[in-house]
Image 1 (tube, rainbow, N blue to C red):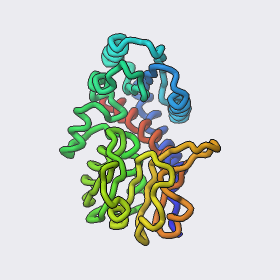
Image 2: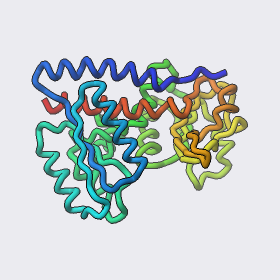
Image 3: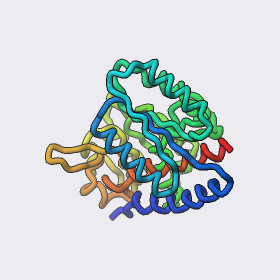
Image 4: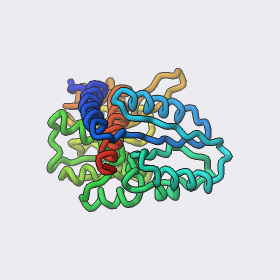
Length: 281
């Protein structure tokens, strides 16, 4: 039976260390602060923003919300980002997704200063990650890397198969695993014989948004299985991209959903805000 990677406990440990960092910064007169922008009233986004606010409060990071109506023009959003970029009291800027279709989200990400881009979506941070330079790393992949480090999971020379190629998780995860010296294969909607590809993996990272997609027969004995998926079923329950109950007996390590990668995503956001505050000093 797999060892369960407890994201809740690890996130708690990360927050404890960050709280010390925040206190040290405040002693120097630096008050780490995160600005979160939300356009529209997506119910999921509302919950995520509330969770981020609570997490900031736990470690002493100041938090300010900027809420826009869904009909807000792109120019108004960009104007706010410019003002936040110029505001020395703001260390991190986060644009909550999704945004309404009339707004070019990539244009907005490009507008956020790379030094305040705590989500790691500005092309400069993406590029720095790619060439191995210091960068703000997208929070979910960064959380997965921290899990590997905390649980002493060997990545060097291992075959890592990543399911999904999104800009938020899949693509930065590819680079993170390359930087950890894994041999990386990416599967997506056009991949043929996907089950056979997954079966070759020492490490499986599922981030495709399809409930219980990864079945036990796709996973080799002893594989490490990281489930990034969060899917709400018709009965209201939450499940991941992995058939947890049947895959867990075959894996060496596995993340649950909920309670796995999710808490680490927010923990690494806080980590990035503290890092930004240190840069800002």
